Amino acid sequence: MNTEYPEVLSFAVVGHPNEGKSSVVSTLTERDDIRISSTPGETEYAVEYTVELDHKPLLRFVDTPGFQVPRKTLKWLSKRPVNEDAQTISDSFNRDFSGRSAYIHDGRILQAIAETHGVLYVIDAGKPIGSDDLAEMEILRRLGKTRMAVLNSKGDDSEFEEQWRAALNRHFNAVRRFNAREAAFDERIRLLSALRLTGQHWEETLESVIRALNIDREGRFSKAVDIICSLVADCMSKTIKAPLKDGEKPEDVQLSMMPSYTEWLRVREKRAHKELREEFRHRHFEMELNNNDLMIHDLFARETWRVLGLSKKQLATVSALAGAAAGAAVDLALGEITFGIFMAGGAVLAGVSGLAGSRALSQVKVRVAGINQQLGRRYIEMGPPKGIQMAFILVDRALLYLETVSRWAHAKREKADPGQQLSTLPKTRQWLRKNQAAVSRFALKLIKGKSTEQELENLRKVLIDVIKSAEEGRDI
Image 1 (cartoon, rainbow, N blue to C red):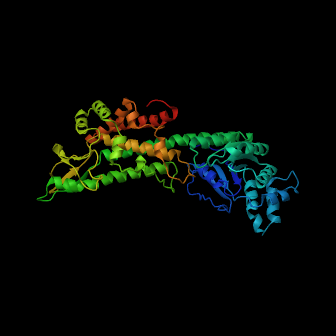
Image 2 (image 1 turned 45 degrees about the horizontal axis):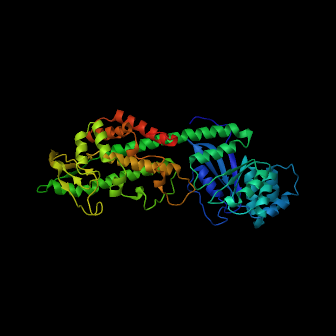
Image 3 (image 1 turned 60 degrees about the horizontal axis):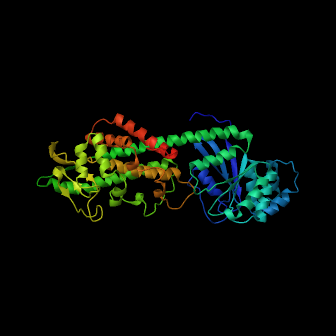
């Protein structure tokens, strides 16, 4: 991006120990390497984290220690001149209490506030207001910085919310509920929009930041679409070769090649998912998926092929539209879900142990290139897959994974459940026929080894529209 910003706004994130300050900073800055712990006092120093786009800083948030002695700090502050600025207050406090360990954290908080433009006060509304909380609010009011209170929701905390809001409204420019461990991109933008309205002096700057973040979000989805298209292209054109020695049967060599072939497809899919995760800044924390989720299943598991991809009828239709009626007939002859590895001439190698439970791999079609002379040696070529269903399976799994990582809060450390996201990003069998045809045409051209430039562009447009349509509630 080439946008220049007049200044980089910074906000001190403060509050009582173990109220979720680090979680808020982690989600707002998309940093999954920030330590989050339920143990009070884990943060001992003020640490600055920057939101950057194209290596240019947009915003800074400073994670601070929790207040230690707010009532004593307020008692000291009440004796100071009312018109003192935050920097003078901080310098005086740290000078007066130098070497006194009980006041170290409070001194670091005051210094962080003095060096930033505004304050985010994070509280847990699941408990009643105490005297320390009231002291903290008054300290922040006396420092004179623009302030927003953040109700860091950790569950059902409505019992004391009215009490909290009454007190917070007297001390803060705005009050906002924000679940740091669940907040998706839209909720982060809403928080920044509310913060934008707290100070007219930074309204224009924050508006530019919000606009830049929205543009960046679109760019990430565009790159994600490229990752998915590249995955499909590689898998639907993949071939492997093996030498055929004198006396060996082609069927035996093919069977020995199958584990290598299918493992390559698995590894390629995992690489694409890793790229999707990193595109949305999940670099350090690898999400653990629930055992009942489709993403935990193997690419060639029975459940994967039963739930994802197109139905038998849809396959016949889109295959015909793509000009692959004969190939579709092979797919459909064995029913909606077939378990078997198909060789030239229609021979079925069933019951290959260790590949997919008690049966062979699902819907893997193997093309035998033949036994030819190449530099004086005979070889067998396996691949690419004949059936286009593999392409739909890969697209479904990639979109399911994309939906998860794009909405996953960086402060969340629990297991992911992508299955809950299916309603917002429909599977390919729920797409309009013309969009399904874009996948099938791309896959068929890859299988035939033909140029796919136009089909690739069509598929990119479909995938981008699928993502946008899901957010807008349109049919796809």
